[in-house]
Amino acid sequence: MIQIRHERLADFDAREPLLDAAFGDTRYRKSSERLREDRLPADGLSFIAAEGRRVIGTARLWNIAVGNGADALLLGPVAIAEDCRSQGLGGAMVRRAIQNARKLGHGAIVLVGDPEYYSRFGFSGEKTGALWMPGPFERRRLLGRELTAGALDGARGMIAPAGRMAPTPNLDELVAQDARANSLRRVSRAA
Image (cartoon, rainbow, N blue to C red; front, side):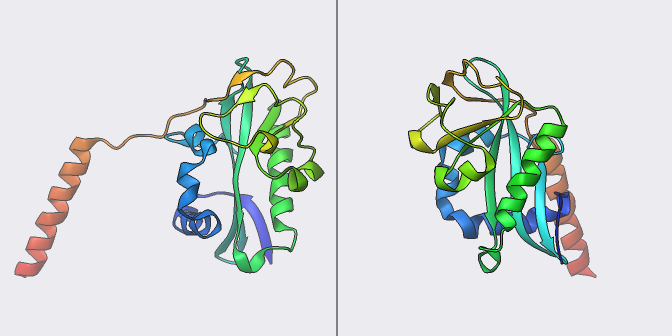
């Protein structure tokens, strides 16, 4: 049985290979990645599809500011395991993301994706024509969906990252941790 649930820390090791398989190395070169770099996903808006213990899908939303300074969310990446595609799971994950974003009071979602796919969820380029991504992007694929009427009115200019920064490792702690690990290895080899 497939379950769509909130992402857990333990899902990281399964989510990353899923994204690599779906998008390859190019995922790190996308303009959307510039908006996600060094950031944490929006609170309560990271989802995993699981079949038993196997992670078969992922969808995340990220805090952004659309060019006029208004807050919005960025949807993506959305990925489904290759052997689970064409079963409606991607659509179910997008609908869940939209529903939860609305419940949490967010006003709009922006994404870069195929209009032919995302239009069924209410996304269009109608109010994103004056927005820009931080890097190359296909204008026709920059789409938005208002969750609150008028949330994208007047949106123009560069889309910018917002939200919480990802914690950066403390170098002193990493060095000390490495020294402890090396010390334990030496002790176990000597025993």
